[in-house]
Length: 482
Ligand code: NAD
Ligand code: MG
Image (cartoon, rainbow, N blue to C red; front, side, top):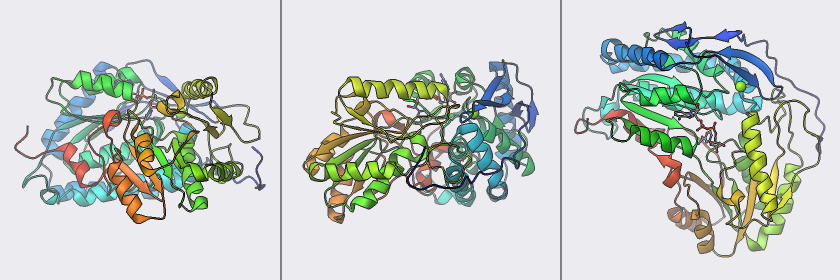
């Protein structure tokens, strides 16, 4: 798209990655063939097929779970905690050493801007391993009982929006607490998980501690329903989360779910408007809006509504949408044709239900999956674009008059993952934060992540926490439990 400033192209080179024409499953320390029908993974910015990836059948999942069990019983479980920590440190350092390779591969497979995979996804993934490496030999100080014990084999299923980072959120705490893992990446973004498997080999991680089984929903279902899995961790849609909760109900399995969101980003009239506009942009356009905690509902105090919307539109006009491999790109490609169809469908509802749609001028690339940054004004809380998770670059703007009205509107959702507040008054921030039913509340910033900070939802956004001391609890038994 044309923008206020012209930039010369600044493409990142892809020569650092060596994508194989096909990949197997990573089971018991080795790449093996899958018995299901292989899937193709594409670059969503060009529709180019990047590679063919194996599909794990029930039988393959069973082999992976048996390998994980053996490793739990024979090597990883009995290992001295300090030694487990050394492996985690080693993995963290290897992720840093090969950071550029991971960033390029993530951008090719997912469509997110290289600037984000390079500056956010990969460094945060390494940070999660460093943080959890430190916990490995200090678990008795985590406030979870005097001698917390691992659960056993963790079955983990992750989505496509932050492929490597969600892997790190799942694998690092599981290993630090002495569990072994069978992880299924999303079908549209398996490649960085498979590169991570190579890192496990490079780090000499004992075979079976981490197993990566690629495939689609059926493979995920086989992982979470395998009878010898002790702990299930899932991030993805609320619908699939619900079906997993049903599948796990009545078993001994422990479960954490990190599901959708429809976060309110609340701007009070005393907020520094320019700073708030940056936060609104970051809240909804970071990662093309494919973010469960995205600030997709903007609640603006009525007296500053026009000023905020005008300033927001001016700022959106300067965003660069296009080639994700260009270092100046702000918004990359939508992850898949299916997700693009879902975004289009919900945006069309916005218009038929009477909201006003605004998009910046400019052309989108011909090939690939693209959606312009979009702002809906005149939105009412009953509209679908105000209620449903779009999971794309679509912002719904509503107004409020008083702090009480802001809180009521913010909490008027079936979700409760995150929220944001923009105000100069500390007392107001504290009071409103207290009343918001959301797992994370950001004040005068948005979409900040840190491995020390627990993340998770209220209501239909799921249960359990990931990150921080609280996140360890999901992978440990304190002795009085199973
Ligand atoms: P999804 O929930 O279908 O997929 C997430 C993961 O679960 C993938 O690895 C998938 O293969 C796996 N899966 C699918 N069905 C399964 C089953 N029955 N049992 C076990 N695993 C299963 O998500 P999606 O279809 O990719 O996206 C749909 C919507 O979900 C999006 O539009 C968005 O609203 C939401 N979403 C939320 C998040 C999040 O981070 N909370 C991430 C991705 C998608
Ligand atoms: Mg892909």
